[in-house]
Image (cartoon, rainbow, N blue to C red; front, top):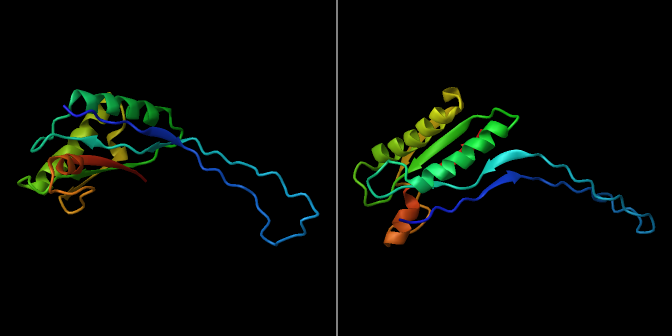
Length: 148
């Protein structure tokens, strides 16, 4: 079973002050002032076996971490779950929808409000890797998170 990598992080945007008017170098420049926005940013994806929409133990562990981030967030943003399939899967749009619904249902059971989710099926039209290899196809069987 392939290990699912988890790359959850807080989105930290740092905006630095700069000298847009090209003022004289004899004046000391202002010290950059960081602005930190501590909102969850979900970078990882949930991956699936071929022809399957069932969540693996690794996927459930990843979703448990995502659940914690969503619960801690002060902003109750909506979450678009985008399901994908590889080119070898029959009924690609149907299986990609079931995958996104599987992720949604898991997070709802954990306690995230159902009204926060939008589910979208892409099928196999947006691969992130080649469909010519088993490894590439495995990367294409996924659900992505878009925060809205």
